[in-house]
Length: 88
Image: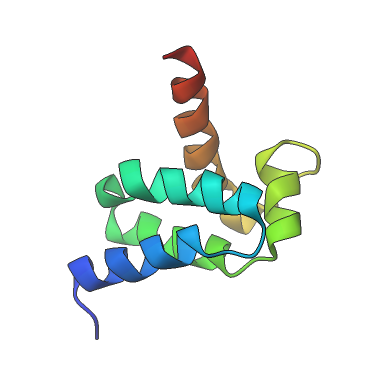
């Protein structure tokens, strides 16, 4: 079983190396700034979300399609993060 620091490092790497640049920037920025604040349960949800296809994730994050309920909380945290960035 991996420790918390190793898990964060692995998820951060996966966030920055997705497949499409848009998702690298969205998930990588979130991973750099916010992922360390997620609880173990939230990290579980985030990891489930990370297993989804990039094109689907982009549609859900951008609001172009309805987010599946099982990853809604994880995507909501990412949306809130980017809304805060827009206000800075």
